[in-house]
Image (tube, rainbow, N blue to C red; front, side, top):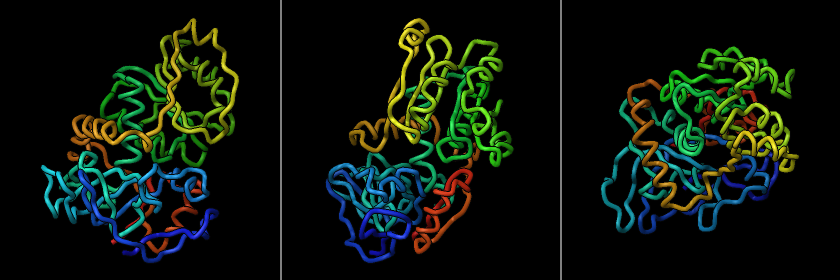
Length: 328
């Protein structure tokens, strides 16, 4: 099969299109003919040699796919060859065929294209898991969502507007993306270039109450302002550490305000646990995609031969929403 391959770790120049062995579904898995996938930040980190796939998963990049079921593995029930599906994969998305666990599949609503469906599983499930399942975010609560314009950030804003419409959303963003983030549904914007310590502006916006939730992929640099911005019983959910992994923590503040710090990753979770997450997302969030309340935001669609250009766009942080790679 055709796939995006790497002969070494490094810059976008290591990516090339070549021939790889077509995978076969094991027990409980299906083989998906991939129509589209999307570029996610972990793909870039894996390309650099810093984020290996879980044992047993494909070494080919790609964490989510949309396509058509090509074959069923042993023991798979409830699915048929030819059905349109979208799914998480442990790896292997940048290829014409990929294997996925049947418990991780979702049927693509008739209203969605393959390109739109390729955006859902990694970013939207990550946002849903960490905001609503782990972060226990409720309607009428308030949150800080970092990284305005990125895939997980735009997904989180859309999910909050659809599932918690009375919530108040504070979003940090670069000046170039602030207008689009505002239009997407942010209530208050912070220019992170001008305000690296956003504690006081958050206190002003929340009348000194602080927020109920912070969704953070920045890490060490934002630990202190995140904690200072949290209110009583507030939750900080950390899903990335791009600014570093070590920082000082005021334990007294955390204790007095009964705050929580929760670390979270999706890729390395056990198969059954991912299946439970997908099932909850299917129940609560997928209907919002079917009726077009939520429409995935696509910056640009590249072909499989343009994988390096797609990675370059993400590295330059010029995108808003998702970058899609059309495979078939």
